[in-house]
Image (tube, rainbow over all chains, first blue to last red; front, side):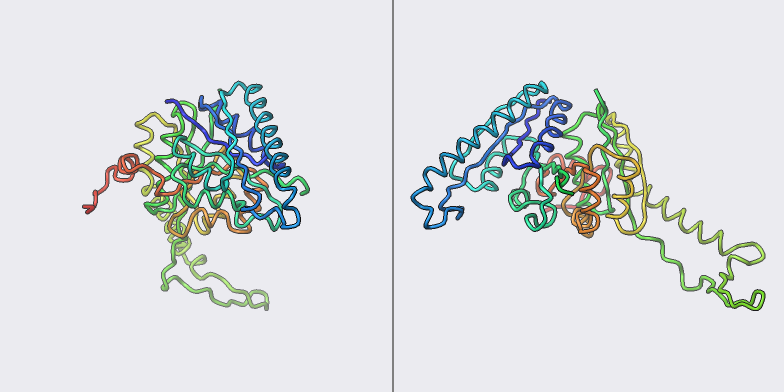
Amino acid sequence: MYRRILMPTDGSGCARNAMRKGLELAKQLGASVTFMHVLENPLVAGYAAPEALPYSAQLYQDLKEAGREILDEALAMAEEMGVEAHADLIENRRPADAIHDAEAEHDLVIMGTHGRRGVDRWMFGSVAEGALRRAGTPFLVIRSEDETS
Amino acid sequence: MNVLRILIPLDGSELSRTALPAVRTLFDPSRAHLTLLRVGEEPAMPSDAPAPVQVMIDGEARMRDLGMHDEEGEAHVWASQEWESARARLRDDVSEDAERLKEEGWTVHVATGFGDPAREIVAWCEEERPDLVAMATHGRTGLARALLGSVAERAVRRLGVPVLLVRPEAIRRDDAAALLDAGREVSSAP
């Protein structure tokens, strides 16, 4: 059976470890992988303060560039491990919504979660939890160890 | 190719069994070994079980289980039998699923535990180091929530076992029906 795995990544420190484990699993399942990076609208997401408004366009371009690098790195890792992979850069969407949109075309969603105290509620970050709450696809949650612990 | 060792905790609820069709869909029987860990409540000891009595030994008061010191040691044997039959009931509860999976070519082990599901799952993971834990997000008492509760969460983080979470609603009706209703009375759904 041909299986497709969705791996959303935010490029955070925890993602690398989860990505490697996820790719190992993909290889074992003979699955192809879609890496997804989601860019939120800075104004909607609220990380551009009013005084930063003049720079928000530049900020968005920087984030977009960073997103491409994250995906390129992911594709390189997949190639190194011999896993067929594609990359999607999704713009102007909330991450949980983008994951929800994409999961229907996949058999499994693999997400890393971080252990930074105070950031994550329950076991997950808010994105993973928000996506899982509506999930129509099994979610594999890979908890990476806190780098500081 | 390595074989994936997958732990599937079950609490006896239908909801907890929704992890099964997900595992069947995603993995290959030839490349995965499954352990069904059925966690149940500790058997309740009846109220007529012999109460401990205070006895004087060398001038010192000690509590002794009267049953343990019966002529035949009867109460002691009786209590352990109670535990064994409780364990057998838990094994019985998952035997249908286990047999069905075996017929499909899966390698299946059954394990049992008593008490707090989270603690049992973590203890099993520490001992056996599975590659994956597959569970429903909802069970009898929120199986996943129990596992991901604060104490267990730290343990799972430390263990670093990937957890496959399946929402009961996520399972396609056919898949769910195929397994959930296997060998059971199919309730007449509207």
